[in-house]
Image 1 (tube, rainbow, N blue to C red):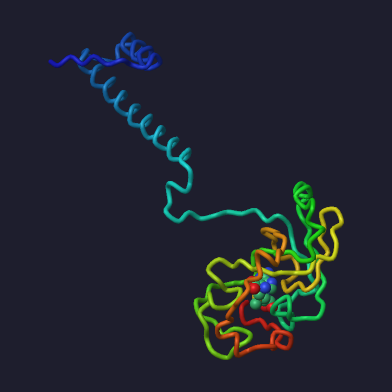
Image 2 (cartoon, protein in one colour; image 1 turned 90 degrees about the horizontal axis):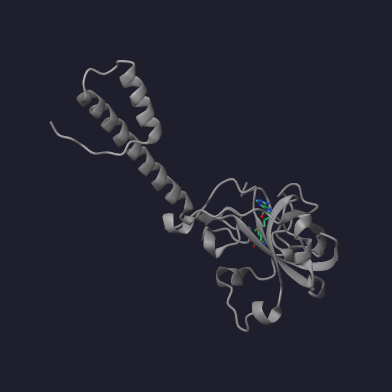
Length: 225
Ligand SMILES: C[S@@+](CC[C@H](N)C(=O)[O-])C[C@H]1O[C@@H](n2cnc3c(N)ncnc32)[C@H](O)[C@@H]1O
């Protein structure tokens, strides 16, 4: 017979003692086997728990090569547009399209010093884009173009970007003009527009060079819904 020296957890040892006294076991061998099976099972569970705890603690970025990213909107954009039909396709697409960006109240201190800028860059979630297209016929063309060569909303990550006029700030509300988004669009970020940073000296506009001047004439429709 092999003798195994194992340390039983106190509660298990007490339980075994109770069972022995109640006459449950016919031999010490049987007690040993039972204790060993219990010990192994507990140990396995403990190790599993431990590795699960470590897994949760490990930063998401280490677990996945391309982790999903979750952002909470900083606020909401309001505009006169409830329907994509007939709305502007870009901020420059309408002489005036007033709107507001209402920031979560607790983020209001972050708006300090923004009022000195005439324009802000809005980054937002195009929440009513219902699918992903890698090729689209954009508003300003009749031929399909690669999604990343367009501003169409049906992108793999439906992030919109608009440079809009900042008229004034009241509390947590930015009063804007030239808004080209649907009412109640979730706002992800605001940055000041800085010509020195954001306006390159020399540019090319790819396939859009043939479409010059039409952004003010062409209106949106519901092709991306
Ligand atoms: C062509 S996108 C351009 C948006 C932004 N200026 C950009 O370049 O990322 C503008 C069009 O997207 C659509 N749109 C506006 N707000 C949207 C929203 N919240 N979800 C999905 N589509 C939206 C409307 O058809 C609008 O005319």
